[in-house]
Length: 340
Image 1 (tube, rainbow, N blue to C red):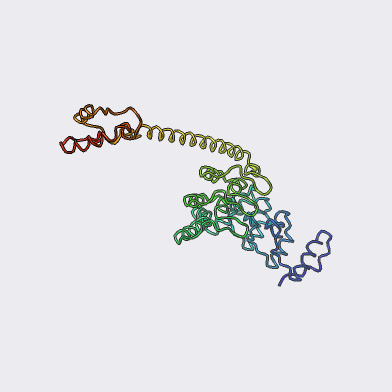
Image 2: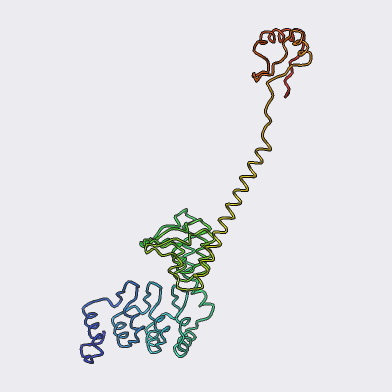
């Protein structure tokens, strides 16, 4: 049974009293804002232990994840709030929760005391490096297996979620290089857009996954694509080194495009030259006359004309040629085609 907070009368505890009354009326303690943050996350940011305990007493999810998969323990660890770290772990917080950047709470904890406490708790639970590595890769591995099953069944690897994000968007946002590689091998679109006109490149740039960016660029992704706010991937990237790399990738893409265009021009030129060399020689008239026939023609005074007539003989001598042909056949004189 949750404790009664109606007796709290300190001015600094007014918020606690208000929240307690709302919770008693049935308001969910796991309500989120547009970024997926719960009140529990906010308590860890604000270092508010009393509110934290209140929410947990009313059943708040100690492992709730925001839009970037941060848990309250991630928030408390990165802020260095040792007291809240202790409370969350005691209430069942997942020490191996992995956020969208692939980090566990201990990865992002700079406070020595808080870090020592988290690592000590991990040791108590028998956490090994092998388990840590397996846990980090578990979500990506599951996604990869699911997509492989879909591919084997001939399914669509580009089906979007309600926000319009394709599997390539999701893999790019999370830095899942194995999944990205698999999807690119299956020729999924690198320029698909979600409901906000974000491409997978936007997702990779926003969350700083350089290796994914390079894979997408090499597959021809448009690095100048703009979302609904008219922003390119470079515009939404907060890491200056990655922004610089994006510009380099643009230059590399342009150089590759120009080189390919040049290769096509050379191939066309070579093909034209080959056709010219292999062009069939123009055929001579269908037949010419044998030497004997030439002598016969001379005797009939019907020398071949130099006109462009189809058989090379003047029209006025057609009748004589016919007589000659009949005579040649009777006497066994051949009219020999030149291309036999």
